[in-house]
Length: 293
Ligand code: HEC
Ligand code: HEC
Image 1 (cartoon, rainbow, N blue to C red):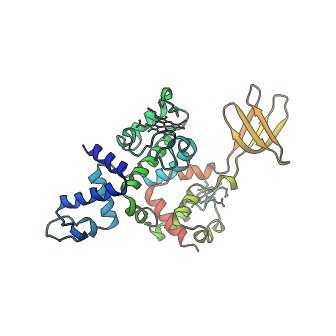
Image 2: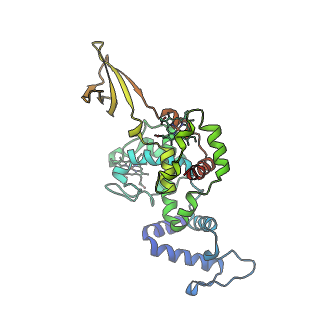
Image 3: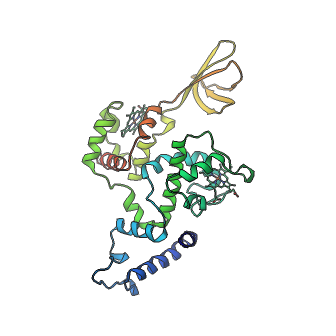
């Protein structure tokens, strides 16, 4: 029943949503005529008097959305989703050549990836949904949290923008950066970072996933005859690697027997750090970096 309601609300979009919210006000006893609500003692605050946080929580409870998504994991999952899934399911999981996922039972029946992980590892190859068995559990969990975040963003529209970003504590963020980032970075890395981006959203994305094009993956390839090629990696799969050498020439090499490939990703240590990030740390660091104008 709850599930059915959620699907109706999500599929129906804004209009249905406002109706749903009204009926929620009805449940909690507020008089919603003309948007005004009569306050009565010993009742929940009516929807319009709630803080964004209370609103989001009330909407989540009403829609039966389950636990709040892990936002740090969802932020890590975003680029993985874009890379591996958006081509078929659309950039916001609203559907493209493959169905939208925000009303999917597979997604709504999952809490923190434990169910989706099994599904994604197997896929449904006979129906055109590939298996993602080569991704790690951590990556699949992060993609799952990304999907839960999409559901949440749709359900909690307006409330979410306020909630998501810049809710951290600057002072704690500064302390976190001092303790956790300066082993690799110098102060200059973060100087003026707060004025480089149009929105806190983009700032957050940029420090969680620095641009790979500024930090290209390079490879050294040993050929069977003993010669060595190296350069920026353009494409790599289990079977083939394409790289551009320092003279700008493109080499496409089959990864047959006797070919040794050594990849070097400058962002790997940064990503290893990101995998340990908690929600609060993420919010605090973004709040702090935003002050570095
Ligand atoms: C090549 C296209 C393609 C790619 C890439 C792809 N999917 Fe799918 N996916 C599909 C198709 C087609 C279906 C519907 C299968 C069916 O009809 O049962 C599907 C179904 C699903 C479902 C189940 C929907 C439901 O309720 O039945 C989930 C969840 C899902 N995909 C998640 C993902 C995720 C996450 C990724 C990336 C890691 C991904 N998919 C990548 C094509 C794709
Ligand atoms: C284990 C080492 C390591 C840690 C810890 C680390 N990073 Fe990084 N980070 C890197 C490397 C390596 C790069 C890519 C190369 C470069 O820019 O130096 C990078 C790149 C970045 C970039 C992009 C810089 C650019 O110009 O492309 C930002 C922003 C960033 N990190 C922020 C942070 C923040 C914030 C923290 C702490 C919460 C952090 N990093 C912790 C290693 C680390």
